[in-house]
Length: 168
Figure 1 (cartoon, one colour):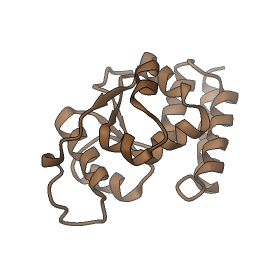
Figure 2 (cartoon, helix red, strand yellow; figure 1 turned 90 degrees about the horizontal axis):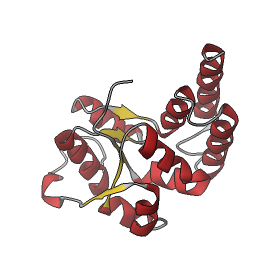
Figure 3 (spheres, one colour; figure 1 turned 135 degrees about the vertical axis):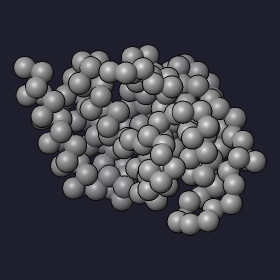
Figure 4 (cartoon, one colour; figure 1 turned 180 degrees about the vertical axis):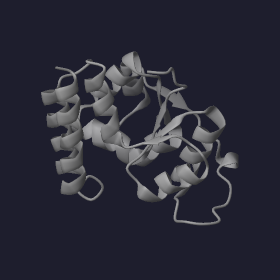
């Protein structure tokens, strides 16, 4: 695995992990790459606070509203534009389940991952087991069936099974 600058979580991914198993973000931060959250995302999520971030090793970045720019296409919220611009400037991987933000990241040549991909990377690197990843994914699906629908969950489990077969 190549070293990375880190992962920047958008609000929907942060909320998914907070509601399912927030400790997994600490495992990501300690073992895969630094995990960052914008102050605007913390405010938007309104479920997770700076002290909790610090306890898990999640780094907080101040939101630079001047860099968000005007949106010219698509339907990105101000927070999503801040995530996109921060990832672009800082060389971070944007972690989002929002399809519009994902498309914008791809157009801007910003690396992007689904939230569940972090779980797969943890399993692949043997920092958590398949059962823990599956359980967390199911809880995320239950809490966020709009973004993490049954098809997404099924695709996640197919990839998880594939990783399990390759690790034997």
